[in-house]
Figure (cartoon, rainbow, N blue to C red):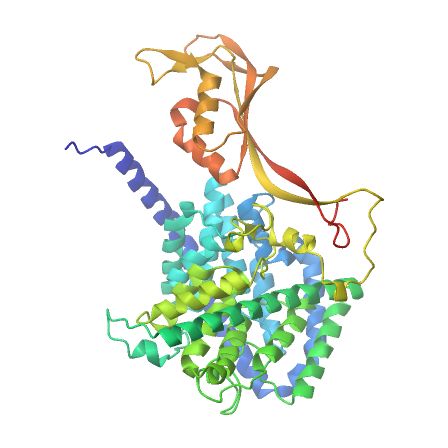
Length: 586
């Protein structure tokens, strides 16, 4: 047997690994240090709020200050996590560095005065903004810029939660529902680990969670309890439906505030007043702030929910309402830690109904509701294993996967794209964002605010959907020839070779078109001669597949003028009339 290997290939791979290690070290040190500063400041702000209950009454005024600062200086930074996801998908103006101080200070102000928010949004936005500015400073190309942005997200997530493996996978998985591109795998892992260690170097400690069934499992030993497995699956379905409810309420609240209150500075005033009213109506301040630990022995918190009686049956709902009022009205922060609170307290409530261990159901809800709301079941499974231990990790995976499936095509990040529809059923088109999916959905009949628009007599209703693609144009001369691997010493037309290679790579749309005089280039090997490129091969398909095609056929495409542009495919399908047509679909 002959061992076939190419030393040049492994030398290239070694250079790739060394390059990204050198590049991500400064990024990781910066993001890890920023996360340490943020977590220390957040803990201080929480303690100050506990010591000064009257600060809650200043929440509306703090909201006005946050809104005005973002209105005057924030501009695109106000889009938060969605801006970073959009820049990774379609690099444009970049992520401004000023996003870091804006989100850091505004999140601290939200928590200081009692807003119900999280911390992941702050960490991810700091990581993304630092990574974007760093990429511009060291002159990375477009593809490398996208990878570094993803690594910045991984660094922020891994450092702020102390879960480097989950951080690395989250940054790649969150970009598209149902699919993941491994191109950024190594940079994300390196950035997440180094940022987490940097954060720990500054003396930051993360909360320990104890789940008995995981702690009692011997290393390498796993025993499946079939009844408990069934209960886990049922809980996973409920966690997924709750994740969908949280996402829809969060987006609905934001839309309602923007539509009902045109003045940007007045929205947080109303939102803050409603949150204060809800707090006094409930008679407790347990649903304000970060919610990881409680102010007193009887307080409801994430930590207390791991104990029997540590939460009320409706704690998850009160936290959901508090968070949607806070973030929907314009305060800043993240959704993830509130989702941890919602999931763990819901798990606490379900434990009694399902006759299952409280700490297990709280731990499963902790990660599963987040898995459903962010559409990142693999990252959340790893997070559960990193936080609780992996002795019985199959329960974590089952809960996260079921929650992901039953949360449907919803999520907290509207710029997330559809990579694969869930469940193998007909669903949103590939490449459509969750924002587009949400806008295309018809509300239930009982929720409709306007009567359906009637269709013209005898005319069928149509559904119009769109999906994001890319178009690659390769310019060459119609008589150029390349070597034909199928015949010894033979040649074939270059444009036909490109078309055949594209179709073999799963890109059947490749076609040649005349392009008279569009480009002029020097003829290879011809001293001073020029050759008019009178032919253009257009290939349309997903951007990642086009990039992979180019890399795989360097010998065929190298040195040729190539141009890429974003395209949008429209699908118009006739359907039975069931209400108002979709936007643009009549």
